[in-house]
Amino acid sequence: MATTRDAAPTANFFDPLAHVPDGAALRAARDAGDPTAALAVIRGMIVPDDIAAALWALADTSAGVTDEAQQLTAAIEAADDGTPLARTLRAIRYVTVGWAIRSHARAEHVSAGQFEQFHDWLRRAERVLFDVCSEHPDYVPAWEPRITTARGLQLGHGEARRRYDRLAALDPQVFAAQQVYHQQILPKWSGSWEEASRFVEECAAAAAPGSLGSALVADHAIERWLDGEKKVPSAMVDRVREAAAATVLHPDHVRTAATATAHTNFALFFTIAKAPVDAWPHFEALGSSPVEGMWSYYDLRAEVPYQVQRDLAAKAAAKASARPGVPA
Image (cartoon, rainbow, N blue to C red):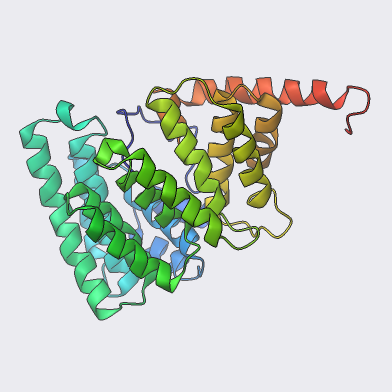
């Protein structure tokens, strides 16, 4: 996923597989360079957000043009047995290689040569995904990366929206797809705040109780902050509190890999809003297995501020719970 800045690697601290089902088995397969074994694990998953998290985590290892990266690309290609899952992993691998070459910098800081290679890799991914979606139009995991390739190849908001709508018609609660399409329509990708705000409210309005659709409001508020709105309005803090209560803190919420992403972004929002007591339940839910989410937007070496802010939130929450009249 493209960010506003070129983030430094934080993989040793943030584990993208920590909250994925059978994450330990996937991690072992990834570390062994065995995509075939990893695919066998993913085939047992049924939740699209879990599948998306697993595929991107596996594909994003050793991205770029190093020898190690080329070996992983070759291994993923060799593991392609023609199934939709294996082909989707191959396509996502092409996307991550291309984006590593492009970097996550703003377009004005990317060279023509980088763009040429970036688009070449994305076109490879697009061809694979087009075939998968043509042959298996109901295969949700292939539609989500097609929203990303539409953005990278500058196919336009209309085409990206068409792809999102195809996915949403199959499953309207895929948080990873909502996050990716939200990126597409932000001003930094030639969208607008108005369009992005409408989409955030659309997702919230359509969300089932306890599902993650309303959590997108935290992502949107963080993006506004990154764009220069450094003072978070109190009304926005209230809105994000409501979103947290309706999603990850709701009694009907069913945890998926996307739950951890939502928690970490809620924690980040309440950090920048200077509301550490509100941030604490989200830090606490992640425990000793944090995920990166949007923290690399906040700081290039996000593990340091994450730990600092987590400690501050824990102390603030403990102090608040000790006050008379405040339940522990």
